[in-house]
Length: 450
Ligand SMILES: [Zn+2]
Image 1 (tube, helix red, strand yellow):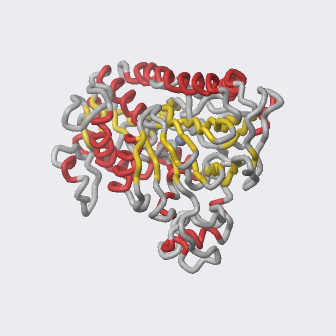
Image 2 (cartoon, rainbow, N blue to C red; image 1 turned 135 degrees about the horizontal axis):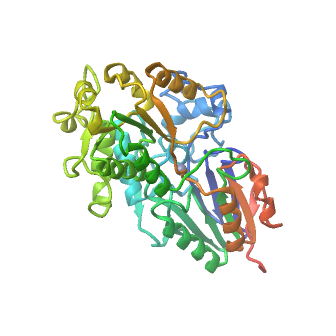
Image 3 (cartoon, protein in one colour; image 1 turned 90 degrees about the vertical axis):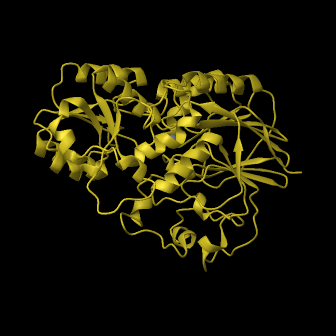
């Protein structure tokens, strides 16, 4: 029988879009399936110009924005694409975490193919699907538990929790007939679950993995400022101490750790954290997965309020939060009492909120990747218009370049494949075993002397 192979169908020299296919005899398992964040995707689809709902896979295949794999896509998604529908030839998909670039193409997948996710990720995906236009399709969903092996034919997958900027993120040890692959998913080791990341890499080292597939978002030149999660807390504490105005913050909508940090800092400063109805819905849904008191929960946590945006219609899932929600006028009048988390898409609320000049705005997200970032330009136009003070305070969801090299060396894998990075070459100093993978090329796995 030919040896098992690893194939990278996305995430090659780009951030996002991981699609890793492991084939072992008759068994084929895919790890992650999301769109790439690379500019190439935006060469064809941007803003309101998007694939048609009648044939999304066909419209993405046209520009090679998804891999040409038979037996993966649903009949509906393919429409009359030249890649003809055939019954499933991929036997399972494992999703490392709920970020769009890892899970966002599940809606294209044949509904017969089982999709394996952590229990918490299942909850997150449901909450996102309920409260946004994003859909993940119908699948036989299988939820795995921390470190509990899952079998797919002759392949055994062991999910290990890791620390990342969305909860319920996993790395995997994948045992094949010819050795073990470790796939990191996305991870960091400077957040509240750093011990999980360490335990995953220790398990990989102990296992003696033959191939390490590691993300490298921050490998290579990275001029962006980065704090630890504790560092963000200290920064926000300093900023709010003695502040007399309304304070504003902008963060990633599913970064539960950051919401917990902002909530704790707001309380410390005698303020309430004010979130959108969508965030309130998400927090409510994931709350049972967290130990009591560790994340803010609407209706249960003091000092957590919901902001009522001006809207003509409200959705069913919003309504429980809107009865006691704060209006722009209430927030404006008692600005000193609040830290308002305001999504960029909702900036028009500033027109009614009328933040006082010199009010602080905490940008608790990644700095833009490029200098001509349109959203960043627009964000600053708004802040300048109101005379609001900009503060950058963010803890990345990813390990730094130096940390990545140290982890690669400590793991001692026979071969290292850097993915989810624009700088795979930055790993070369980690050892001679680093291979920058090529798209859609099968790499045979072979158990060998280490
Ligand atoms: Zn991620």
